[in-house]
Image (cartoon, rainbow, N blue to C red; front, side, top):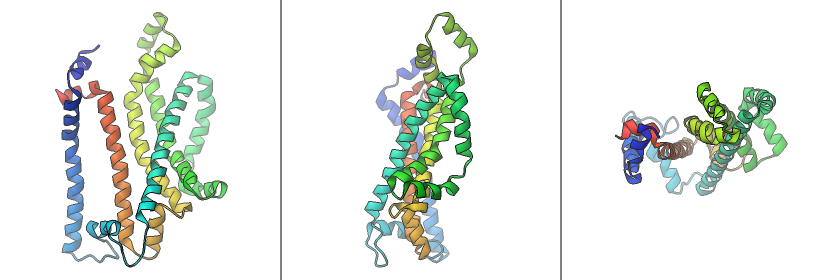
Length: 274
């Protein structure tokens, strides 16, 4: 065990949580400050609502019944969050598992990587209408679009982490007669954790983007549907309310991944904690 790892283990779980809060409260303050400046500037310069509504007016559409339209916020938020979370989980698990398979087998890498590169080269916004034609409307279609958007970054980052092992170390463990499975479990996978968490952070943002793109193209529910329909009638507060929810949802998942990263890899942050 390295000195850095032994130092990190001395920190209690509660103290690690306190350090995480100290590290991230500034980000929360910056976000709140952004919304405050937005609110003040719009009111100060009397910007018309049809051009740019205030955050308070936008969020009022979430909590107070409006006379112009009923946007069924509870239903649409639930639909989008369901698509987003399920797509993230499916993309993460399948992407990491397939990356391990690709690194494990050179034949699998030679067969699958050209296919992934070809699919990733396709603009999702262009093929989304085709996916709707083939699969129809619904949550499954939107999740599949989100899967396509986030899958490739997960695979590439994880493969990079699994492959970024010093050859001298591999030669040493092979000399000690370590099996291929032992090399993966004890060396490759632990070494790839920073890359995997980076992939999960990318996937967190890409998954919600993919879900919204799917709702733009073919859906009668969800926040993407609210944005499209509100835009057509120039009712901008629901549009900005939807965007705020989307942004906060992605940010919360990103923060959760960051917390898990620091709890599962405390040795990587020892210098910040001691």
